[in-house]
Image (cartoon, rainbow, N blue to C red):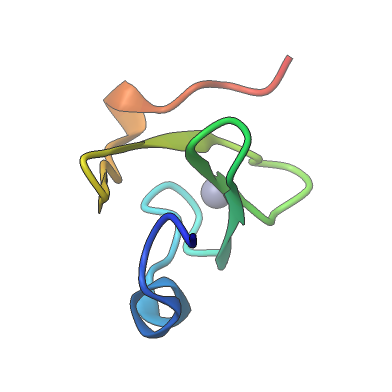
Length: 59
Ligand SMILES: [Zn+2]
């Protein structure tokens, strides 16, 4: 099961840097593909929460 619709994922971008996002199904997150940003956004009830304040910062 995808976290979000593939067609939706295609149009979503990281709100911090506008890079595309990829799914991390194990973590239930959408992860920024930018090497310098890399924020991970939670998906709650199949709704991606694309808020920088809610994002998990990479270690
Ligand atoms: Zn980003």
